[in-house]
Image (cartoon, rainbow, N blue to C red; front, side):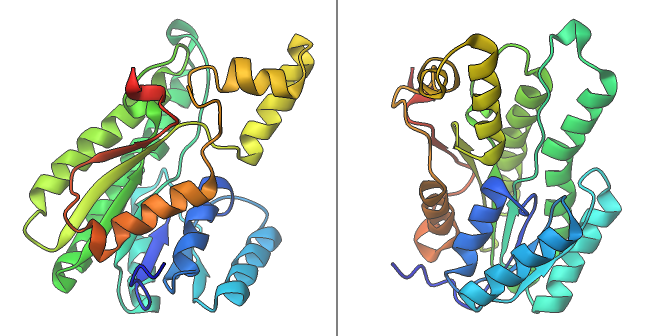
Length: 263
């Protein structure tokens, strides 16, 4: 399916692995030039960048902005515009997690999660909007979570940040509704990333369960489909929102969670 995105340019935060890399790949395979961002071994990041560029034929660049630093985030957006000549799509995906009861939650970890999972979105949007307004075109897509809609115990900072992402999404959407720009949020349930795979293995060992049992009774307990959301499913939703077909969707949260938040 042709989404009509060829020649556009995107920034995807937190995209050196996992969901972010999958989303960047979906854009690049549809002719979008992409700036990757994220942490990791420099040699591994360069291989990821060069492999994606070779596979897709798109321009694939990298900027190592620290998602807790507003000035570095603004520099990343300016870099994308300078190197690619435009900025059509901003995907705010960077995020971290920490699990702890509220009364034991490390203050530094709370501050870090709010900075990366929520405040980085503000800094990136703030930097991108003048470019998009000048173009009279833009798509801002924030990767929230089912936890932007419902809570789970011991994930206070993550849940608070993702609820905040939805509020920010709605506010931005109202501000730019007449300027050819949209701002929406995707709310995934559990996706089978390398991070989740490690969690499955550790839980199986700790509880004396098989990995299949952990998936069904622990990881996907809240997800009625009992199926992980796939990278292709997330990519399809992203491409729709980025395309002309998604131009009428603004200020929305789109759940892709196997029914988790239906009840």
